[in-house]
Length: 524
Image (tube, rainbow, N blue to C red; front, side, top):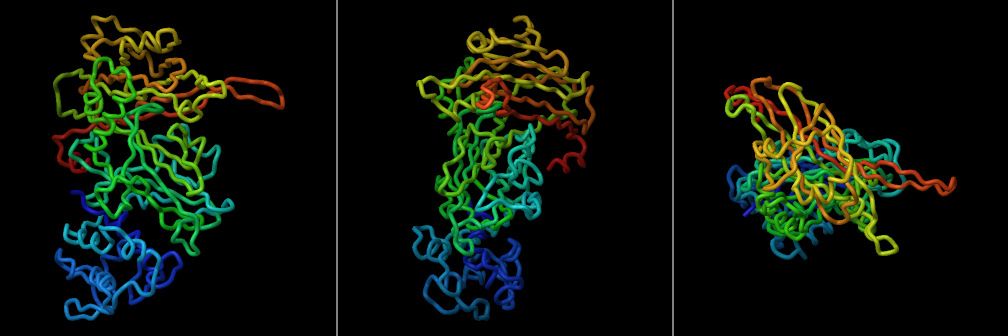
């Protein structure tokens, strides 16, 4: 069974029990009784009566648990280690009623006890917290939540989001065992991570039910998809604000978000559970996988995932998963993964690795059918850019034969050379029957027709020569998807076709030597 998160499940609730939003009691500097909750490290520190957490993993030996349990039991005080502690919280904070008195099992005190019994793991994501920008100066009216799509994001739209927003967003994987930011080359089926994102409030009014004064509820959601350039089957992640660690409720609630301030949202990413959900979603989509099963597609090559995080005020509708951060500040996505090469492995050389991905029509999932019942039609441009050492790499693209004839054959292609079937077979593409192209130069383009609500499966073949690579050598592969959309100027009575970036992904080159201890330790 997974453990409760200290930072997301417990500490955020302690803050609203301790009157942090209004800056009183444990929310003021120095705090009531020498203890405040302004930072997550405070729980691991001390008050004027002593340390708050006991030396062992017995809940009753930890004064902070004991004072909460005393209040739950109706006692006025409790003795821990010969010291008398007053029951907490004082007064009747609404959060105490919601998370303890009126809450279904498991209640806050019990979950806190479970966390202590499991070893008091401090999973505070300090690295992610360190990416939060400074307070926003000029602010808009009201409550204006957003998800950060780049370092220093202050929520200004349009025009502030970079074209490769999937590589710059403040969305991270966190190791639950220590809170460190994780950069796994592959996702093992037995692994679990926290998907975290930095959110902000560009408004001049605080948001959240436990703000001071109470304001409109804020909600956030996290979704993961198979690796894609714009859209693919998806599953929603459980929220880390759930007291029940087995709950599948996907809504994370930021309890308060001050004007011009930032905070984190978090979701539980159990890799096996996500894989199972994606297998079902792919099977339901009917996408042509070129003879692969949905299980093979998801589990193949470490199954990199695309993540999208959304936020809204309760009175707002959710951004659709087809929306991009350029269109709506309330959504951000991360499609960034390392392409790891160990030069200590000498055979085979050259070697080739295939990275599967899907292409979808985000605009179709955004607008749906038009007034005549027809699906909105928009062509797509896929651009592949290889910023790699020329003498060490060669890129290939494999497409299932049936999909190629249906979606690709009639469109334009630039920068790609068709590989003869006998040579293509030697490259061992993942599809049983595939059309394979080789990239000539550093950039290639493929034009696709409207995809409707269907998906196109492809695979990027990355061939490399280890002998031509140096440890730490930089490089990246960027795939960008643009949609061709009509732009109507009613005043001038004109219509022109414009390109809208709707997604993409980036592989960053990671050349290392596992024989070098220092290099190995650095990567850990």
